Each structure stands twice: as structure tokens, then as C-alpha cells.
Length: 430
Image (cartoon, rainbow, N blue to C red):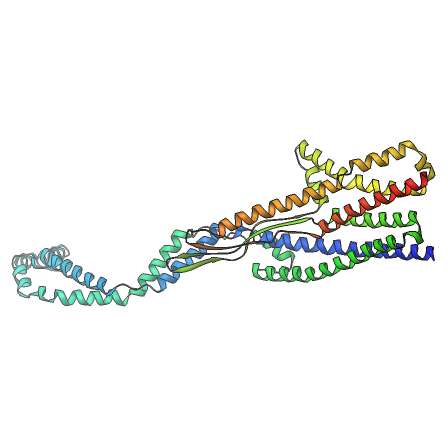
């Protein structure tokens, strides 16, 4: 019966480890999709994108120009100005005979008018023109010209649109390629909208799977740990502690390899009123990071500064290597009389135990989360409460990730394992 229970619990823990591996794959896949979404929708491509501002501004002004209408009072002013202009033109060029004289001179030069006839006409042309009283028709001419200008008002709007395009966009400028195109193509799409829709759907589906898988892994591993404690007297102290240590190793590996904290700050919507038109920008990422302990460790180790490498190595030792060695040696301590009687081995086990920083790391991680969450919430709140005439909707999606849950649980089990080993050792010495 005892052997059967030990084998059954061992197989259960192996199944829990396999399910944990599947969970890790799902979280890695989801993190990839979330990072792609954050990259595609960075604020650099939205609110801080000058080309997008040009497009939106052009759209607004084009819409206003399409509705371009001159005030009727303007046409009255045009009619008055035309009357004045045509009156001056009549006096300076028509009634004075200046225009007629120029035409006669040109006719003489080309030999089409005899010189004698030209001289006679020049002396009398002014009186002839004044006798026609053409100045009485000036108001009618002004009205005709004003009506013609009004009829061609749409052409004026077209000239304004072309001038605006010329100001905003250089005709010789080459079309700028979207830097996000490789991401679209990677997921089999050609536009931002299609890629966003696809990735958001994938993230939503994975959320359901991950939450379900967390419950499965947690139920299996913790359920079997509780079973070991309940059957402590039946399966024996050594077997129970070994199985709990195995469960702790599973939780440790999941905790250090899965994301611990998601820091996610977004502008959900930005709206500004420009000359009566709403200028709007959709959801944009201000900041996004989702890292596991291993990710942070390797990032620090691969950093250029020697100080970063030292910190990375310390995190690797105190939060990953030392806890793992402690669990393995503690289990070996139960089975080997040679190790139990070896002062050096005992010293190493207890020394490593003192230098295990897992619990300290958990506290630091929670403090970092509380700090980041509070700072981001406060900053986004200040942006959202602006009094400068534009509307901003901010969202803080920062949260603890599954890695934090598993790592914290490992810390608790590690403490329990240490207590059980110490009690067992005390009984052996007694």
C-alpha cells in the first residue's frame, strides 16, 4: 500500500510537471502576441507620429474646404471693387483714348492703317469714345463679372486644396514604408487593423486556456502536497519530504521561467477638437514589459556594464541556483547516511539555506509591483484629469503574472520542507 501511494503521488506530480510545461508554452506564446501588439500600437506610431498628424490635419481641412462658401456680403464688396476698378480703367485707358492710340500705332507699324488716317483718328478718337457714354455700362459689367466669380467658386476650393497639399506634403517625397509591415506579414496580414484583430483574438483565447491550465497545475501540485502531509505517517517522513521537495522544484522552475509582472500603460483614447472637427487617436501603448526572473537575469548578464553583469549573476545564484541546490541536497540528506554524517555536507546544506534569497526576492517583487502600479496609476490619472481642452482616456493593465503565483507558493513550500527536515533530523538524533 505504501509503495502504491508513493508511485501514485509521483506519477501525479510528473503529470503536474507536464501540465506546467504546457502552461509555460501557452504563456510564452501569449507574451509574444502581447509584445507584438504593444510594438505595433506604440504611441510613436500614433500621437507622436508627424506623418499621421499631417494626414489627419489634411483630412480636416479638406473637409472644411469642401464646404467652402463665400459670404454673400463678400460678393457685394467684390461688386463695389469691380465698379471702382472698371471706372479707373475707363478713365485712364478708354475715355482718354490711350488704348485706341496704342492700337492705331500698332496698326500703322504693321502697315494695316495708313499713317494719315491714323493721325486723324488719334486726334478725334477720345471725343468719339466719350460720346458713346460707355461708363454707364460699368455697373452692368461689374455685375456680370461678380456672377462669373460666384459661379466658379468650386474651382477656388480646388485651388485651396491643392495649395494645402503642397504645404503639407512634398510632391517629390517618396512614400514612407510602414516600419510595422514585417509584423503584419509575420502573422499573414497586410494592414494594422487585420493584425490587431487577429492578435487580440489569439490573446483572448489564450487567456481562457491559461486560466484553466493554472487551476489544473495548482490543483494537482498543491493537492498532492496536502495528500503527502495527510499521509505523512503512512508513506513515511522521507518519502513525504522528498515528494514535497519534488513539488517545490516544479513550482520553482515554473516561477522563474514564467512572467512575474506585466507592466502595461496605455492611452485608450485621445480626442481633440480642431476648428469644429473631432481629431481622435485610438488605443496606444505608452509602456509594456512582461518578464520572467530568467528573462531579467539574462538581460542583466548580457548588459554592457560590469555592474549589470554582477547583479544578474547574483540574481541567478540567489533566486535560482541556490534554492534548487538546497532542495536537491536536502532530499539527498534524507537518503544518505554518508551525507548526514559528513560535517562538510551538512555545513554546505545549512549554509546554502541561509543564503537562499527566494523569500527576499518575493517581497522585493511585490514591492516593485506596488510601486510601479501606483506610479503608473498616478501619472495616468494626472494625464486623464487634464484641463487643457482635449479628452484623454487612460488605462493601467499592469498585473501580477502566473510566475509570481508559482514562485510565492514555492517559497512557502520551501519553508515547510525545511521545518519537516529539521524535525526529522531531530528525531533521528534522539
